[in-house]
Length: 358
Image (cartoon, rainbow, N blue to C red; front, side, top):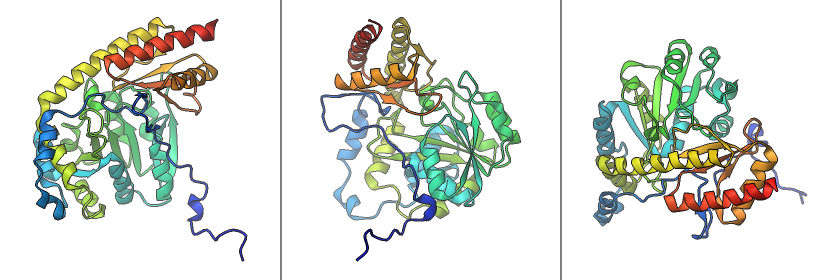
């Protein structure tokens, strides 16, 4: 008898560090400010669309190309449905982009620091990473435009810093980078500007990725959208799963896109709370970055202080995000919650800072 079972895992994946999502607690009493979910539920129009879903729709397979959803998204962003793909969250879209456009072993370019799921998906695909460090102010360095690679992931605004990719940088990248540029706009509805309407119609080397998880409050439905030249969309369609987006997700996402008044209301409330949170964090002696997202990234002054605050807040049943990695291990990421949640966070944060300084 063997002492240990045989392993059939690919050698290249045996040391894989899997992506670590934010903690999803079972307790409803916790204040959850660690995964950038919208603190407000979807509007009544979305819930009504779900309630009115006929049972017969569940018996049958969903539309494999999500045409109604794509037509709705296209009309909203000023293009045709041939420019749009709908996916099972933007996470699936990230995988599809790697599958369709990157040979195993080829290089994928990333800013360092950015969304850590990119690294995991690149490793699973068997590609390699070309990292370009962020500038000292945590903005993306224009040197990234000249990095070698078949694909670049460029997060606008960037996670976890919350800072935007400026238009001059994006134009330089699209002019000079030799591969495909994937602009991840998971948080762009909270930003001052977006690239989703313009770039996919005039550039054939870019795909702009969106999600309904953040601004639309549909994280539980897992709906992503990609906008690109029709030739790129055709390639992505060829490699996606046959029925990648279920009926309920298609129906609720379509209803959400059609209710732009509800989106505007949600964004207005979140931006107002974000501004108040940034101001209060400064008053507490911390260093929040100027956020363009529904979270605030804040420097605490040291790794020990950041970890200590993270642990103390968790003991208070308040979850925020801590990243134990170089350059950001002295920071916390705080999702913008309701005003009441942020009041509680600031109250406890002030107390713990006072105790640390005593």
